[in-house]
Image 1: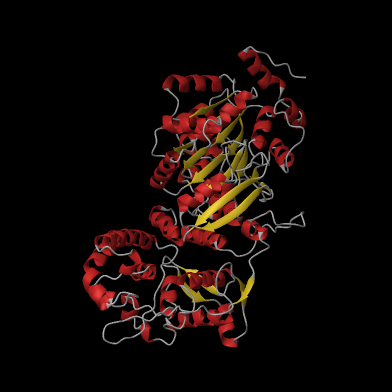
Image 2 (image 1 turned 90 degrees about the horizontal axis):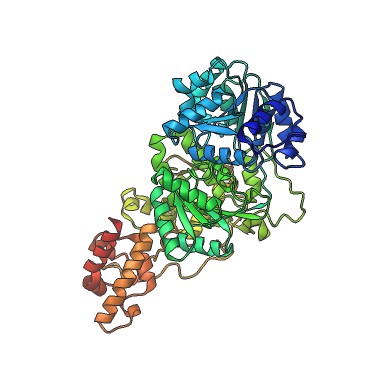
Length: 635
């Protein structure tokens, strides 16, 4: 029905004249090449065409862009799209141009000559869609351009609308300025689009944008083709490599929290021969654009990036997303993993979780608009990362959706379901010990401290607090620190414990208090630890000064990165010393002694007396060297 001319001006004339009033279904096929709408697209488009403000929450890859692109062709005038990133605008314009829809963006990436040319095209009604940033929309220059007498603004679309909410994962204060744009174009319909919006966020969007009795459309958040997996971060680089090996030759994104981490990981993967580039705000606009295009065009397989990468980028064949660090909210996590499998084919999402990463995220809360809200969002993310039930159910529940698999065999949805779920184990006795220890220490400490008390640690802080005198001190030596920490996570996940504040202080919930008072039995999903019988030889005898008391050998926590460095340095020192003395390394002292040194981190000769396998003679001979090594790795 529509003739497509090779002449640029004739083609633009057809777009502006012939498509106005056309049927959405016809344009869907002739312009975009699709035979049918995706869920909710038709309803949203109809609502916009009827001039009603609309809030649409659709998952990444759900076809949000079409919800304003089709109405832009059918309605008279232009559609103004508020977009948060230059790269997103460029990608959208490039995509529209490939199907013959002329659009422009107005931002700082344009030369002055190109900017003026774009403005002339807008004023001459040669474009249907104009992309601007929220900062640009607030300027008098752009408002003056859009208010020209020959221009009719028929629709204002706010892409990534969660940025207007302080409960959103990427709050942008400049988005609040959009509210005033309605005064300039009171007859324009407003369409807000986002992939992630809880009830809090949806309320903020409507209020902060001044939407007029909007219709709200919420699509399912379930991306069935994405396999969800979470691993405890131990050796992050090795875990990443093993994961990439499962996807040879495929496109993947690795998200890191900081630029420094992006640089380091990119360099390591590049040295190992992987096709990899980086993307973060520290690179020049030219380098970012170049790296992004190489990735989009499949000329490079892996991009290592901060959250700045990927928002709105339509690359359908990303087969996996790795979160090297924990995201600062469930919304951010959902948006990042949503960049995998936009073509609907099977894809994977891996999150490497470490409690130490939580502190890295929290470090930046001072710059947050509302640190208290940021903490709540982070704690929700931690709760999701430590869940012991179906990850998909937990993720959808966060957004208020109940997961019901149409496939009776739901083993494909996440790593927990794929193994048939985490088995229930009787943890009645250790749970009683742990909760009682929290009560005895007046519910003022975190998981690591409580585990140390249970293990009978004599570290300085415990001694100063007098907690070595408690009845719960040393009653948990049948389990390792790692086991106590996993049990703690399980009790938090099942609501027996509450973790709050910057220092993750543990307190008993009503359920936890009831369990202690009633002495009922308790079974919890425990993956690898807390056996049904106590482990032997957790309490190991050794010489301890004149008293001859028992010494408890400890193991460092999984997230103790200082301990990892200490272990590595001590082993290298032991090898050199063994060579000097013409002895086997184990004759200097065994690995258990190294682990105990790394866990307890003695700072003085007197504290060396509490190290397993380090008698008085060896402490005298090697003490200075050991203390220097430990001190160097701690500073």
